[in-house]
Length: 111
Length: 112
Image (cartoon, rainbow over all chains, first blue to last red; front, side):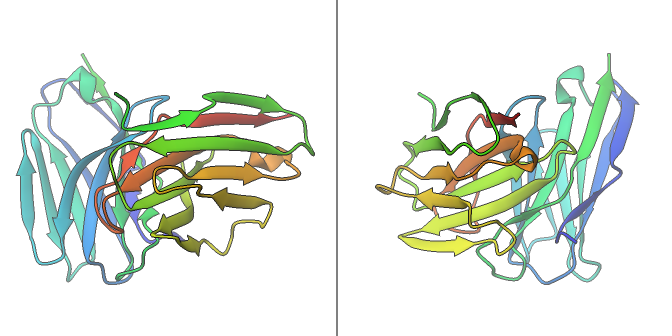
């Protein structure tokens, strides 16, 4: 199975609500990244968090990393319809040059 | 200007044919990648190419071969196309391995 796995697979919320997505991985990592993919498009990088960091913010995005639990979460606050997309986490699997993505969380934000 | 570009955007072809997808990045990055995304959105790394060092995902059939004429290009050649090769193929690049990746718009391949 892949290194990173997102949970839930799908999330449907109303505009203005917060959305939380989780990512679990199996082996030690150097960093973990979150990406967004709009329908029919390539992936866009959101945040990179290194293994020695616990939390990072970027605008309405907040990412946490718990290396003891081998998990990360992505929080989108005050969601907007434009946040509708699939969100992927990617890990480097303990220093491997092979980045590994999960299957993604499909987020739908209803206006 | 597009940072990572791919051509063609769409590719429809018959089983058994050989085809190539081109990728170019104008970011000056050292590392380039090819991914395959299936209908369930699972994104699978196929190749990583860093300073002429090719790292291959062992599960990729040898019908797939990356070719890098220079640092800014990593093309994907596919021999003897099969129905299961139908997917969206993404090229990406990063300054160094394990760093932020910039993705191209994807090539939608349909094998009939």
